[in-house]
Length: 250
Ligand SMILES: CCCCCCCC/C=C\CCCCCCCC(=O)SCCNC(=O)CCNC(=O)[C@H](O)C(C)(C)COP(=O)(O)OP(=O)(O)OC[C@H]1O[C@@H](n2cnc3c(N)ncnc32)[C@H](O)[C@@H]1OP(=O)(O)O
Image 1: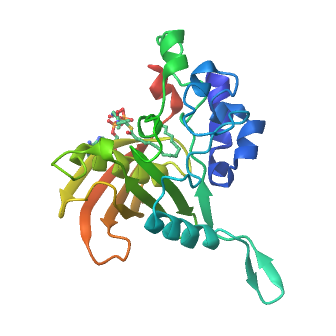
Image 2: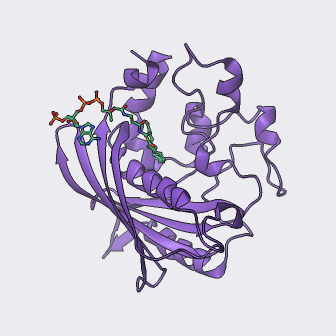
């Protein structure tokens, strides 16, 4: 287990260049395609012959979500400067329903929990009902952008998104940024809720690395309407880079 985790995090820096294909070659990142629990997640005519990438468009995505996806996705394409082709510094992160195929803690987690564990933000079966999101990262600028369409199962105040669901997504976006160069965990998360997010709406979440001091990463996040005119939420977070043994109770 420890060896496979070491291997995983040696390759962690390359996370952003993962593709579904890459994941199939390195299945530790993804859920086994043979797992019956994965097949049971099918509600759309998706093929589960390979790990399902939840950050690709599905029919539940509305026009705003699609427009923003296409905008950022086009920035991920190869840039041409004169005659020269350059790799873009923007990458779309694929999204599977587990971060690791075999989570840490094998020593004390039962096989049943191991096989059933799913990423909190990717465990609602009905497309469009929960967290529909896609993450884009810009390594050069140390920036992460998430396009989120919040589904009807995320209700808090009537007709609006639950503050805990917003916090979950902020933790995900800031955590993604903090983890670009290796595993990191949230030590502190401060959130100011400025205006409610209507259920079903699409928002843009932008996260920046403000400062790095040794193991500490200070990250900020802003949640706005797609045109940027309405500020919904602001947050700051402290992440600490960790040795993976930390998650294994050692
Ligand atoms: C994990 C791998 C993820 C990889 C993902 C990559 C894929 C990306 C793709 C998609 C993204 C989706 C990702 C989802 C992400 C979700 C993230 C979470 O939700 S994490 C769960 C919630 N967090 C916890 O459960 C932590 C519980 N706490 C701890 O385990 C420890 O407290 C920890 C690791 C945070 C720190 O423990 P210590 O023992 O390593 O470090 P000490 O010695 O306590 O502190 C070091 C320094 O930090 C300061 N510090 C620690 N906690 C602080 C705090 N809360 N506020 C201020 N300072 C703090 C201390 O004062 C100290 O500072 P001085 O060195 O003396 O200057």
